[in-house]
Image 1 (spheres, protein in one colour):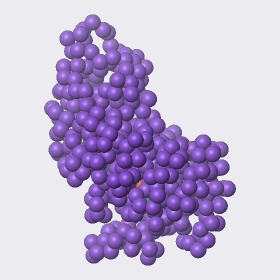
Image 2: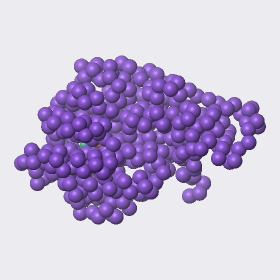
Image 3: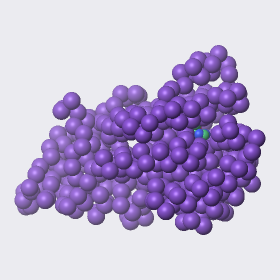
Image 4: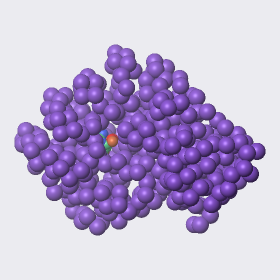
Length: 416
Ligand code: NIG
Ligand code: FE
């Protein structure tokens, strides 16, 4: 089947010349094409041709793009999308002046959601998550990462990862599962941390690995969660199994996460609001993707990560929603792109690279998606705009009208 995506106003290819990543100021080079169309064959990008050359080929199907902007399908590379309940009560406490860490120390925070997840069935969680996946697709997302981490017992962590597996079977978009059993200590092990770490090591990790329930293992390395020593211990075990590594680190405190990310050759290190200059210098020399989460700083009203320092020193930056009920109850990646530009002073072009090719690299899927290059998956987000800056400029207003995955239209605003 040969398809033609005809007549867009612009194609933002985010071309990498086969490098499949954009470092530093390269993030501004998004390779804009005007007066071109895209040929898709067998779910892959076959060619990008001048409109004047269209008549020379015969197509099985033409998708008219009617002067709209085409981007690579967007990638949300850090979410906690499978959860139940909500934390609106904590939202109110925060508005009254309580900090995120105070709320967590008083038994709220992550463990509040752990309660709700433990009291929910597989079906409850699956049905809630389906709506969220469909919302993401309607925002132009064609790949998304989902973490466990609100079960914190063998049964409940596996339940979440089984939900993610069922979502992968139901939806055509790429869903990348991450095991985050080391999100925090559950109340029953607050005073026996070693026991919980042993359960992760001896029960959860082997089961998750043997049943292929996660590609990545993530740890929250933070004063209120896992110490550097505990994180080191778990990352060593996870690496030995063959998990790729991610870290939640430098969110509120700097306790050594960067050195551990380097030691275990992490694919990404996420948050980094408190990253210091010395650690920036180490990070930018590596191939680790810095996944910044400006929705968290906005939602919790604290410092934004220093995106400028990482980019200006040749680092690799991705951005993501971190969608979760406590620190970023924000599902909309388009909104997060606007916040990244306005509050972290990222250029529009850098922001686009950060949710396409660099987000793909943060999930180790950059060879097959994340840019409009030949033989990559035909994944596209189409926006009702003449010029790509309009996507960020229209803050909180979704301009995505068509989402295409593997060459198939999976969302069309006109059909709503
Ligand atoms: O990425 N930092 C730790 N974990 C999540 C928040 C989880 C929660 O508050 O429920 C995050 O911000
Ligand atoms: Fe997170």
